Length: 41
Image (tube, rainbow, N blue to C red; front, side, top):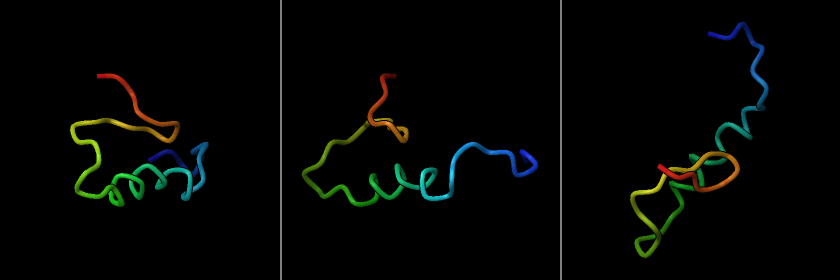
């Protein structure tokens, strides 16, 4: 899609996904995050 010109490594791109997957049952819900942390919506 971007002809391999993305600015992030695979690890940096997947870190937020892994972080969300690791939240336990007492963690926050209904949030949006990017690689730098929570973002407002």
